Length: 415
Image (tube, rainbow, N blue to C red; front, side):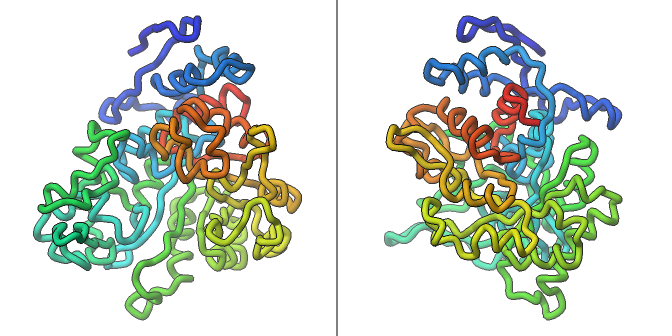
């Protein structure tokens, strides 16, 4: 229910985030224009900004209303507070106005597509280790910390069937490397996240995620994850089969290709879709994993070049946040050479991932590494977001808490 509070000299109305178990039922047309429920965090960030034009502009939007925006992309749903890639996480992202929601796609032992960030992360994102009958099938069982060695385990979707996968519950991503017992191992949630909503995470197949996101009339951005098993899997499931199976789920569900943003770090997957599924490839996103080799301020290090990528048929490129920005001699955040070259080549850009770094008072960590000196508070993520939108020209930003990007998009006209 709404309540009023005073912030920055303005009376603002904050709508509390309604838990997914109390979701209202709307017709598709009504859902599309349902107001987003942002909660207090966006205004906390605005009030944390230093005084200036950006703060004044964002404060002027405090009362809303706020609506879903394609600029706001739910990264694994809303995993800042909800277990990633669960029904509850996706619903929270939709409530917060994410216009596009991500399912990272991998496959089970029986080659069914499911939503997980990695094929082998079940030991840290689900309760599999607390289920002895299923845990017995893990690639590597739990091993306690001892003699200076960290606790370990390895449980993959390819270790278990779809039915076994669906019997698990999602939990917040993380594990305790000092654990002596399984019960200690699964308690690894970062201190700046929460387990408040982590006790009934409903795991999702790709088809289930598609149906849920479609119910909300949002768009889809499935990422074809790298297989942890050798391909072709079991000798008859090739990488091409895997890439095709992903597209087939949308076609069989009657989803318009214009609502789908296929993703992959594997350029060969993008090329496969360009050649075999041109309608779906029009919005395929090349996730740029070259950050270990590329210097974002030295175009000579870009292999292939932005122009070469465009010639291959790539239309959208998505690097981490820090690759798109740098600091000028006065310490101001500006577009990097990477961003400038991508724009010259006609490539659209998406950035990842906001709200994934915890408190920013120490510079923000990896996602902010190129602009660390300019990041002194949580509110400074809005300075970065403003540069990404207005100066770099990204078409969307992945966020672990889509309320933040939805708020900015509505205020800045990024729809």
